[in-house]
Image 1 (cartoon, helix red, strand yellow):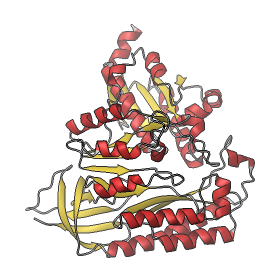
Image 2 (image 1 turned 90 degrees about the vertical axis):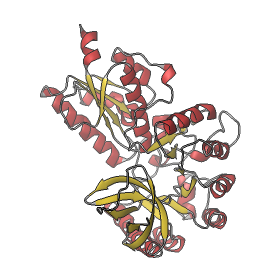
Image 3 (image 1 turned 90 degrees about the horizontal axis):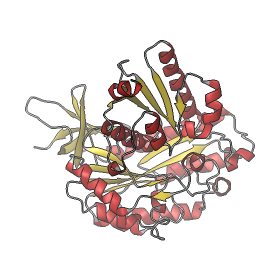
Image 4 (image 1 turned 135 degrees about the vertical axis):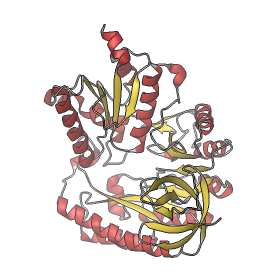
Amino acid sequence: MKTKTLKKNKVNVITLGCSKNLFDSEIMMAQLKANKFDVSHESEKLDSEIVIINTCGFIDNAKEESIDTILEWSEAKKNGSVEKLYVTGCLSERYKDELAQEISDVDAWFGTRDLPRLLKTLKADYKKELVGERLLTTPSHYAYFKIAEGCDRPCSFCAIPIMRGGHRSTPIEELMASAKSLAAQGVKELLLIAQDLTYYGLDIYKKRNVSELVTRLSDVDGIDWIRLHYAFPSGFPMDLIDVIAENDNVCNYLDMPLQHINDNMLKSMRRGINREKTIKLIEDIRKKVPDIALRTTLITGYPGEGEAEFDELLNWVRESRFERLGCFTYSHEENTHAFNQVDDVPDEIKQERADRIMEVQSEISYELNQEKVGKAFKVLVDRVESGNYIARTEYDSPEVDNEVLIPQTDDLHLRIGDFARVEITSADHYDLFAKAIV
C-alpha cells in the first residue's frame, strides 16, 4: 500500500545555494519524474506530500539559510502539511550526524553523492540511461552546464572539497550528448560551471582540456552563447582565451574568482599565485580579448587582514576596473586549513570593508555603463516585467550581472528566449536602458 501511495506522491524540491546545487536538483527531478513522481520546484503551494531540501553549506550565511529552511519545513511536517521530509546537499553532507540529533522531524539525510540512495528510500530506481537528463528550472533558453564535480585545490578558506570530494571531470562525449539534447529542447545559452573550470580533464585526459571541450561545444547547432564561470587563476590555460577570441558563440566573458591581491593574504589563502602574476594574467587576458568582461569575487576580513592589506585590495580594485565584481566576508569554517588561524577581524569590520569595495565597484560599473550609451548590442530576452522586456548582453550572466530594460510598446513584439538588437539610451550603476533597433 505504501508503494502505491508513494507512486502518487507529489514531490516539491527546494534548492539553496549556488548554480551547481541547482544543476543537481534538476538531475534529481528528472530521475523522480522518470519514476512517475509528480515533481515541482520550489512550489508555493502546500500540496506536496514529500519535500526534498537541497542544502548549501559553504559559508555561515548559507548554512543559516539552509537550517532555517529545514526548520520551516519541519514545522510544516508537524502541522500535517508534509508527510515526508528529506534533506540532501552540501550542509547535509558535512553535518548530517549533528543535524540528525538536533532536528528529529527529518525522515532521512543524504550527502552530495547519495542520489541513488535517496531514490531507493523513495522506492524509486536510479535510471542510468538518464545520465545527463534534467528538468530545467531556469527559463527554457538557458541552462547551467556542470562539466566537473568536486575540487582538488588546497584553498585554506574553502570547505568545498570536504562536501564535494576531489575533482572529477565528466567525459567530453557525455557533455556533448547533453549539450545536443539541451539544444534540441530550445536552450540557446550554456553557462559552464564547475568548482574550477581550468582543472577540467586533468583526471581523465591527463591534461587541462577545457579549451578542447569549449571548442567542441561551440560546434553544437543551436547553441548561440557559451559562458564561462569559475576559472581558477593559478595555472590558467591561456589557450582558453584564444578559444574565446576565435569563436563568436563563446561569450567575451570570464568569471575568475581572485579573492585578494596582497601577497601575504594570497599565500595564507594557499591560492598558488601572487600579486605580480595576478596582474599579469589580467593584462594578458585583456590584451588577447580587449572586449572581454571580467567577473571576479573577493574576500574581506580573512585572518591577518589589517588596514594595510585591505587598502592594497581596495586600491587594486580601483586600478583594475573589473567589469563585474562581488565581495564576500570571510567565514571561519571548521576543518579547513584557515580554521587553525585566529579569526581576528571582527564581523562588523569584515562587512564594512566589503561595503567599501562594493561602493567603489558601483562607481566603476556606472562609468563603464555610461560608455555603452549610444552603442548597439545583441541581447537575449529573459523575461517580461513591469512593462519592460528584461534582456542581457553577452557580457552579463543571469541574476548576478547587469540587465537591459526595453520598454514594451504596441508595435514591439519580442519573445522570451529570442535575440534582439538594441541601442542603449541611458544607464545607471547596474541597469542599461535601451530601445529596440527594428
